[in-house]
Image 1: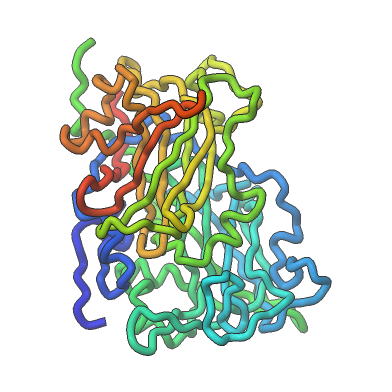
Image 2 (image 1 turned 90 degrees about the vertical axis):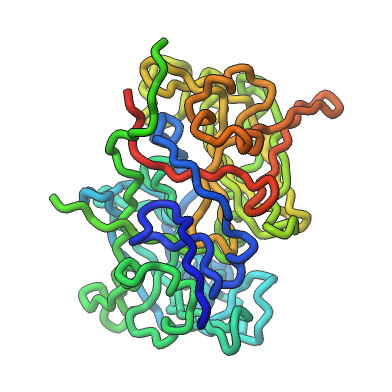
Length: 243
Length: 199
């Protein structure tokens, strides 16, 4: 991570969101747009959105320790990951879809393209989903994911993380991100984490939460998510022609 | 009340398929046989700055039904909902970079009190190497309303063609080709959603 170029093309607030080109993360080099984004106002098309479209969600979907369908339990440190999904005003976003995926406790994904020699766990798929409740709260039971190596730079390891996908109320609030763990030693060398401006990056890190910890069962981690869509302030550059 | 700071974005990475494209989460087929409207297929390739196919992108779409109504509580207009249409699709690009959806051509939706928008489909693109998702729109090259569309007008004239899906008909199926070029020659115009519509 020596020669990172932070380009100016960012969608959203550049103090919060990562740039598209962040060359320490090599996959961005040929995939980041090179031309300026077009500023457009929110119309009815962006102020609506898909919301929860997947109908068959069951409570078991939120228990990654047992949802592999094998009858067995995943190996690893059991954790409860929970928090609230909020809008920019702090109002809870109820009944919104939260989808997560993660490596197993050894840092291995079941994905066919993950081929490093970390052991697979036959009782762990690493996928879960739920809807937030009426208070905007989501909750998953899973095992703590391991770190895993990748080929981005010499001796590169991803910090342990859980991927989150959320819709929120409209097309403009769509978010895919990653949740990290407070005590992880690997942040310093991870360009994906480092691509986020420092203060906003700290907000991707879950806190250990002893109140969530269940005695003789599982450790609690808390992570709140703020889905702030684009600002509602009027879009100035539009000058409508008179009909 | 002080506004909360939004949660930042991170790449979807390479390992999302088992979760985000599992059986009931992948939606290529938006239109059932009984869905009202002109049935179409959208297809194209996702390409990177070297012109190399992107085999691990995820593409989501969102659109109005053929009457121009969104199935969403924010759309309160007195237009019919179609029980056979939600307007949402999600798929992945294949090993050859291609993706497809079968859907219906959306109706027109308003821009402001005075102006309508040309028919369009909202698109979000996710992928390894995309630290934040990209937004764009599919317009239909054969729609005369494109000439007055207020969003297309914001796109530099020489880049508008990148948002126009090109029609062709193959064995009675209406197909619109829409390539997504992440970078370089013919780069798709991507959007930054900023502010609200002036009405």
